[in-house]
Length: 224
Image 1 (tube, rainbow, N blue to C red):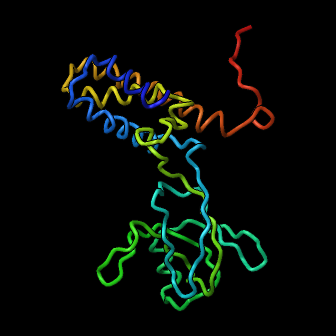
Image 2 (tube, rainbow, N blue to C red):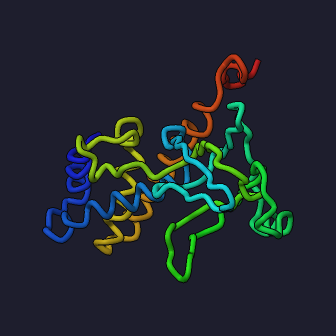
């Protein structure tokens, strides 16, 4: 389903073509996308970036579209990947209380904004422990917010192409909230959205994370 098709469906279901309503359809869709991406971790939402640490600096900036970590690795001088363990900030502070405790990082934690002399330079950053002693290449595999279907140049996204019911019914819920619609219709569309979300979750965290060789073929028990 393209964005143009989605807009047409929302208007057809609601029978609402008023100017204010149409102007807010992108908001309905973006709110739905945010709900979905914070509920289901589909493999299509994974992304890889590489970067470098700075010797003597324990902080590492997060990408602007960062949602959550899948893995973080430091690449040593031999090209080997050393995967860092996720810990609490307090653990890293206690384990390495002195910023001069340097070496190849072993742990990381989501620290929050980077603030220098009262100026926020990054919305989110990682704190590493111990503090990197030299420049290291790092690779971050993470979940991210993909481009919204409302602004995609071709009007297409993975969600629209592969599982559009969750976009449609989620947008209809937001549309009825905007219209202050009947409670029974909002309840109906919320149930349709939750059903679609459950099916997407089955795909994203179920079918796409296994195979018949390791897990066996899915089957329904038949009574003899």
